[in-house]
Image (cartoon, rainbow, N blue to C red):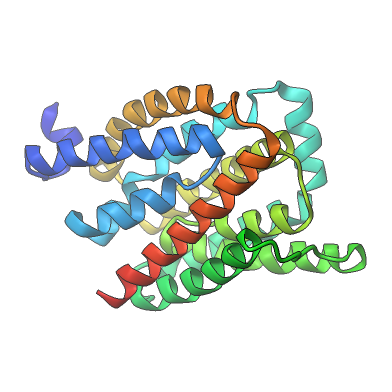
Length: 256
């Protein structure tokens, strides 16, 4: 049974993966995102790329299920309607890009995602207004959904484009948290289905992913306590700051 969860890893590597996942779950509970980003960047140090991607599938699914429905079913359904464009194209393009997960150079997608995220969040932290004009909002939602889906299929990361959209349109704290949970949940389901088809999600890798789900949920519920104490202003600054750090770390990994 232990071998089923270890996926061929040494006990030390498995313990490190569990510790990283607790921390990633805590950050997600506090600000609503960044768990796949933290897992991908940390796992890249000591796990094979395919196992790193497969490992985050179930923790992402279960934590987003909790986040999406934390305020109830009605608000979650309304949020899904509000961001339906982003949801549709994200799901479609996760399916389109998932078969190329092994073919896309890691350096390429890390740089293409990390550089613009760092610039965007850095400008927001410096007080620059980057709000999307309402008559461009629909097009921005479609376009950012495409980008999120394309990156999601190959890397398991589709959150930053949504964060860019939410921050630039001035969404409040609860709306941001719920929107992330709903969009990320649908994306996580699409990612799981896509990689069941590609074979990357299989009995061995999903056993490892299931083991990571427990520490992810523990960290998530601890993080919720921090989230509930954060006002709108601090929450927005935490989100922007974490996006900057995330983008810089992706650039660092790409250049290693």
